[in-house]
Amino acid sequence: MSPITEGFLIAKRVTTRTRSVSAFVTKARAVKRVADAQTRLIFALDATASREPTWHVARSLHQSLFEAAAEDTTLALQLCYFRGLGEFRASPWLTEPALLLSELNAVHCRGGMTQIERVIQHALSEFQGSRSVKAIVYIGDACEENPTALNALALQCRLARRPLLIFQEANDEATSRCFASLAALSGGAHIQLNDASGERLKALLRAVVRFVTGGRKALEGSGQESDKLLLTQLPDGQ
Image (cartoon, rainbow, N blue to C red; front, top):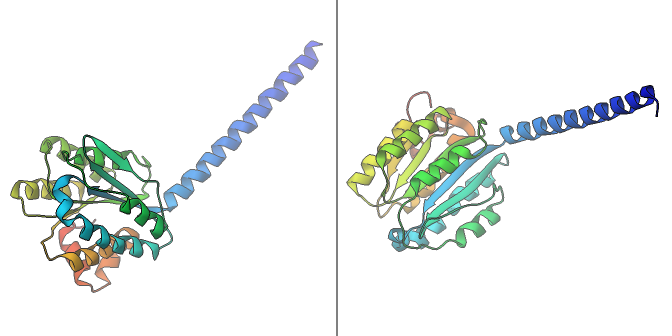
C-alpha cells in the first residue's frame, strides 16, 4: 500500500470517529435538555417500625400526591424509603399514578434507625447540575442521626435549589428542632401534623405539587388554605 493510500485511509477513519463522537455529544445534549425540561419531585418516607400505627392510613393519603401529579404531564416523581437494617430504596422516575401506587403498596414497615442523611445524599446525586429536581418531600416522625451532618447536607440542598419540604408526624421536640433546622437551611418548609391531619395532609401534598410546578406564584394565586400555610413556611424568594 502506498503512503498516499495509507494516509487517505487513516484520515477517513479519523473523520468517521470524529463524526461518531460528534453524534454522541449531540445525542447526550439532547437527552440532557429533555431531562432538564422535566419537573421532578422526590417523595421520601420513613418506613421504620415507629410509623407502623399510622402507615396504612398514611399510605392511602399519599395517593392524593400521585393523583395531583398526574394532572401535570411534565411532573415526574420518585418514591424513596428506608427501613430495617440499612435498607434504602428508590423507585425509577415515574409519571403514571398506577405505577407509583404499586411501588408504594409494596412497602411495609420494618424496625431500624432513621436514614435521613442517606435520603438527602441520594436526592443531591440525582440529575446533578440540573434544575429539574424542584424539591424533596419527606414524611417521618423521628431523627436519630447527627444534626451537624444533616445540616451540612441541607445547606447543599439550598445551593442546589432543592428545598426540603418536611412533614412531621408525632410531637417529639428534638425531632421538631432538627426538622425545622433542615427546612430552614435548605430553603424549604417544616410542617408538623397531628393525629387528625389526614385531610390536611392531602391538601398540603397538593399544595406541594402546585409549588414545584408553578412556584410561589401558583400558591399565591390559588387561595387555598393549604397553599397559604406552605407559603408561610417558605423563605422569601423561594
